[in-house]
Image 1: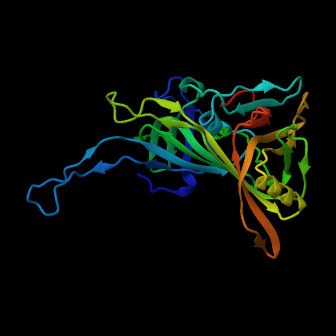
Image 2: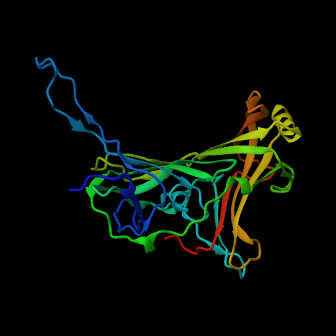
Image 3: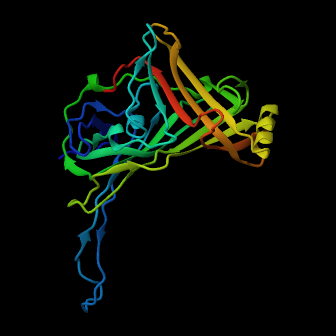
Length: 336
């Protein structure tokens, strides 16, 4: 048996045809993460005249997780397929761009059949573990100047079990392009206007979007220690923005004081598409959100420069008929 080496860790995934039924993994999930088995062995208290107690124990439930982190890319959308719902690409006219849209529900929730679950294998050169029914109950997208955008996603599945890696090679690595924060643009509009109209320049310094997807495992007494059902309850999202303390920031603070609804769009463009389409010329990532500011913090100093942080509670706006939407444009018609 080999000694484990960090550089030889890997994460492999495969989309399941049936939730909870293991499949052969088909691609690497590019990024970082290791298996975490949350199974607990419970040692019951008992009055048996033995001071330290015995080694009697039982397991009441099994659950496995993997905390995943990676640069956010235009192409690797598996955490969104497993955290929001199964989207299908649509062609952008006669161009090579493929549009992947995730519009979070408002008047209903998604059914379990709308979500892609994955079989996941993870570990290193010494030992691999495997788990079925993997989905994403929450994720965070963040970015700051001089860096690639990041994605942190918490994966949850049935139960990690000892396994071996399916045979994958370099050809099974997705070609990906990082989304760079510096290339982003911030748009803020009134809820009576059109989202993405008013460009706010020289203002956004960093951002973080926390999304609780609403998907959760619903354990029940059905003859197994793991869950066999997932359901979506209430999705929630909150956007944290750090502004240069300028007139634009003052305008947004006034909107907060007045409890004025706002429409916020964050637009990031990357490399040019091989062939421009009807709508898009570049690889694109966009966040569109409606809501209101919930807090504006006190001024802070960044090497003598004044900044201010705002928290934006994302909620459905009836006037704009907007809640939260993610759009990715790449050149992949399918998800490996």
